[in-house]
Image (cartoon, rainbow, N blue to C red; front, side, top):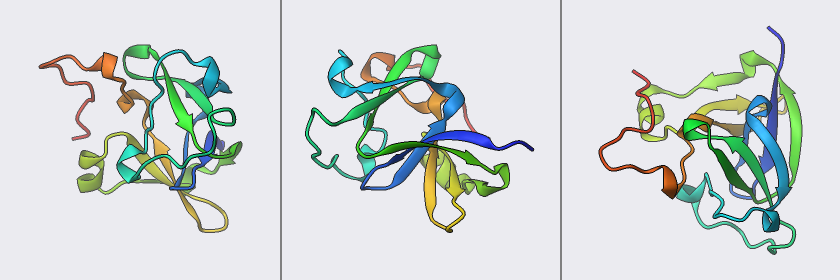
Length: 136
């Protein structure tokens, strides 16, 4: 299988990435006019890096809408061997639908691969509607 291109963020909390095919653009955070999403908010507050240096990765999220993900660290693009992309255990996948898989880098370090369809903004929430399909 051919490698999968991943846009990776070296966030001080944990390295994470999204499939490059889902990225619309990368821009300075000051150019995005609505609140951006901190996809890793459950891991703690974003480290302060100065608003002028922060960027956002604009992706296609739930319902095909553009969503800006806060990038609190350097960004790069990597080609990843599909065999290095590991599925989450079912219990973890059910509790963290925004995480699609774990990526094992050649140096054996790990990063999280985000599930773009599970990334939502407050505007996406509709009472009584399920946003993410079950993984069962």
